[in-house]
Length: 158
Ligand SMILES: CC(C)(COP(=O)(O)OP(=O)(O)OC[C@H]1O[C@@H](n2cnc3c(N)ncnc32)[C@H](O)[C@@H]1OP(=O)(O)O)[C@@H](O)C(=O)NCCC(=O)NCCS
Image (cartoon, rainbow, N blue to C red):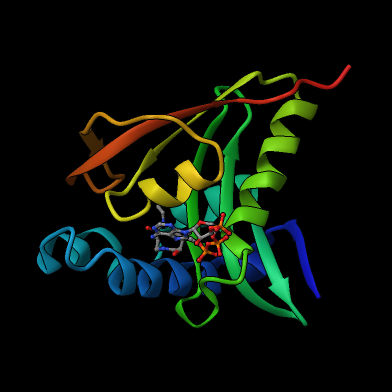
């Protein structure tokens, strides 16, 4: 059974591994391989680890972490939707998004935002997100990648 829970410091390395593996598996063909390596290879910094502990959620299947997601409550920004390549196509990405959408609504966030990688924009559209224009996403390492800015209105609790 799939469960979604808050990430802890013990999830930092598995979250890093899933991010790296899923980007190389799914984004190749949409970006130069060197750009993908510059984006996700290497080892996690202390700063990245603290973001995982603060804002990440993980999806676990029988104890195995199979996906990640991140919500910044202050601005409704979703990041880090990554699913372990061996577990794609099973509804895990959609469940993580639905979890974050409910969480945003619980915190009074009415409009959510994300920057989709070119390969993932169709996935987000299937999940009810809108956006077609191509823009530029600046990674924490200062790398610029093409992306599709997307938004979704969510129901606010209370
Ligand atoms: C994109 C990603 C998160 C999707 O996760 P997933 O668990 O495989 O997706 P789901 O199984 O929940 O799919 C939900 C729906 O989206 C569709 N879908 C999933 N990936 C898709 C894609 N690349 N293109 C078009 N549709 C897609 C599914 O067919 C499903 O459609 P349905 O409404 O008919 O059921 C996953 O493939 C991934 O980690 N990719 C690499 C990392 C990445 O690019 N992340 C996004 C960063 S912005």
